[in-house]
Length: 96
Image (cartoon, rainbow, N blue to C red; front, side, top):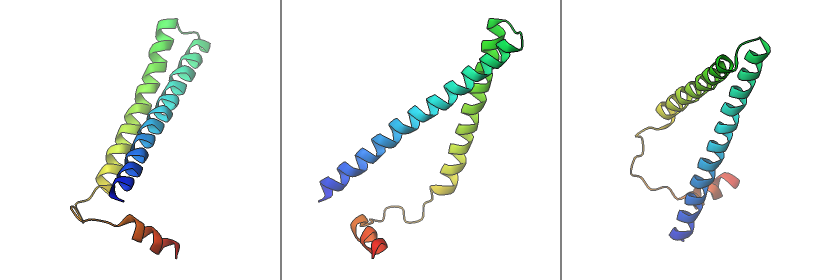
């Protein structure tokens, strides 16, 4: 039974990492592309437009990193550190 829960936890961790990476890359790439297109439409050179686009992408990355740090500081606590939680009983209690 312990091995099955370990497998589920591992699968959830891998899926969340893959999904987070894909969504983050998609958002940042979209910001870079739209910033570059907007700068080109404003008459900037290709190099200046790319710089503007990447500046926007890095700003989005910075915002996501700050949000991650704030979430980690709020959500990761030392309360209950080292305690064992029976997820099956916890889930059964929530559905009853």
